[in-house]
Image (cartoon, rainbow, N blue to C red; front, side, top):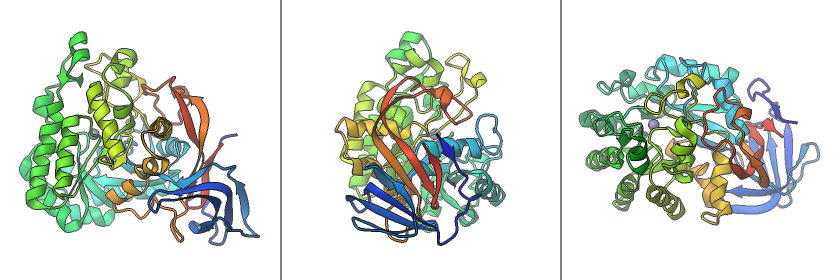
Length: 438
Ligand SMILES: [Zn+2]
């Protein structure tokens, strides 16, 4: 039977021991991959290896399943504060742990936006009371995400911001971006960009291409993304700092990141499962449930993203989990809201890259653990002695069908409804507590 526990409501005693036996332990950071046991004491990993035992521990038989660091999703929208009819910290995080995710990074486009210490305090206190996983957040680059005046990035970092973005909106003003990179350089945090030139987007609703032509709707061209990325990278090169490209969707933007990396610039990039799993034709099947921003692109773009994942150019996989109520989606393509839910489906969809032989398990998991952690300066995403006991147990072979009506999220907007997948989280552990088990 499926069970959930709130980790901080059940805060475990510092000497509580749990022994995970008979697991295939994979730590993507060190490359460790062996059958063995792992012992947690309190909220930390005490030790792991082939012969680790403990006489007074609770025993969990892992039955040969994969035991990995809990997954980190560095792009979610949990809609709290402001739109809790779509999602809140409890339902969003419940959905996340059911997908093997132990840490999320919320985007700051809430209402009010996360541009003040007060909103960060609210989020931290609420998460501790009501969330099933660790909840982190980006701060806004600009006040109210208006793109004009920089937010107080110093105090936001102190309040817990793991980086800065105006996600949902691009920073269109290049001078504002230049100032933001100066703070990025001095504070050693990323500036994460939702790359979209709003003038080029010109109210488009899906990718500009054969499907937008067929349906007679306005399209969003690839250059809408790539011109902003090229501009940002030119500023990065001149000013310094760190740049992170959110949810890349085009081959042109990916190529720009490749050139920046070759020059030694501090640039990283993430991709969302829908962009490497689906192309623009999905809109014909799923309608508004395949409408998101950036949009699903051509098959040529999708294949470039797969190659970027394979080669290591793409650092991380993140969902852009964007829940919407039915009313926001039961509209025309032009009028419906952008976005789909994703935290419950990230792991099984990503595992298809392993099952198809595109990525090794270690390299795939790295994109959802240690690589993601590095982007946000987080010490999680590893299996090491003394590391936080945030873990996921993965059954690689379990075959199942995605049923959006069964999502723990408040919203069901997914183009993956009915997809057959292989592999799932069977136990998720946050701070030593089994927050999800089936
Ligand atoms: Zn975005």
